[in-house]
Length: 137
Image (cartoon, rainbow, N blue to C red):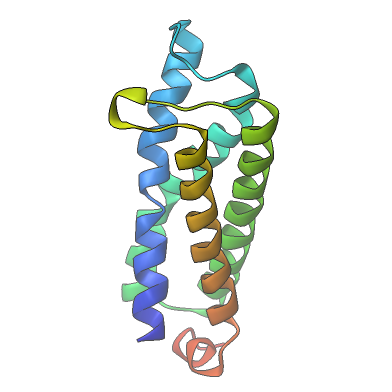
């Protein structure tokens, strides 16, 4: 059950690549609806985390190893720090992307906080004995 949660959360983080890629494109295209330039670093972090997520899911399922355990730990910590940075940026340079579907600053912060809690849960689970055994650690 715990490994399924790690797989789910890791796969869930792939959605970070989709949104961040779109918003990075808008920033660099000069679109008037684009995010402020302060959001470039969080979006680049999201793009990195999101694009690597599905590769990690594959390896969690097919080739668990102690090296993968270390990669997952560092990937989750980097993702966590990126989300903390994005939460800070959301206060310094508020941005409510896609107002047509009701996203405002509160919605953006809520999604960032939810993803932060998900990444914290994975970091915690990686230190559980049965998870370490799964990764042959």
